[in-house]
Image 1: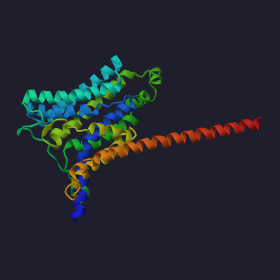
Image 2: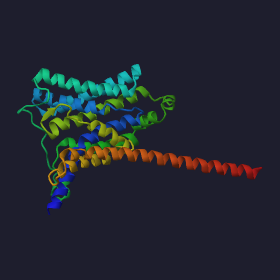
Image 3: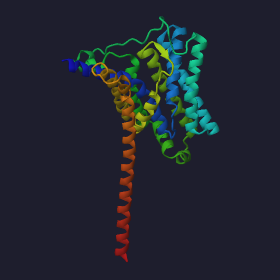
Image 4: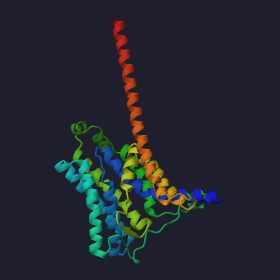
Length: 322
């Protein structure tokens, strides 16, 4: 019985902890499909976490704070697109600059506004309430796992389904994939490549900021320095590991959330050093990257073998003709 409760609690916690990863990775998938390598997911998530709690404090409403954070995330995504498309700034340099800049700006503004540099909260800030799904919550075990979260958690699941429909069953999605596969060919077909890429980066910024807002006012009700704590980079890995596919992102995001939940839960039932246990999610990320690299090597080997087979067949046919 205790084992069942432990498993249910871990699976439920995994879904909750996967939420910011799924949202950010989905934003990364839109950018990847549009031919843009977006490594600024970390900074966008951190900005969303900070803006959400500050706006909630001043507006007096958590939902209002989240909406402001989403707007700021979209603006940051547009700024990212502006520097990349207007001035052709290297994507890696631009992403690292944004990540470092947001990390320092949040600390500076927190010090100026509230006099703190490590963490900040206020009793007036209320995190998003959880709610049960009426029919689902009555199902034993399954209801305990899939029900009882706030709306951002549910939205992350719906966003992946909507993202799949948009990317693979709409004109806008076809344009995104066309731009990512061959930019020049897309231009000859009359697709506005700049507009498509800007849209993808704005969407990514909004999703990342929503994921960050979940950290500060959805899961907790405080902001700490560097609150995203590498989750943006985990989202980059989840995007790659999930084949830049919304449904793949949903599954890989949950995998990493489950690894994080396992690390948290295992601390209560083991004598292993806490620092070692906290490295488990990083080990999961490393394992995923190794699998991605192996997958690429296998694909390359398959392509080479197919090419050799075709070449040999062509030579045999040529010799038979002679």
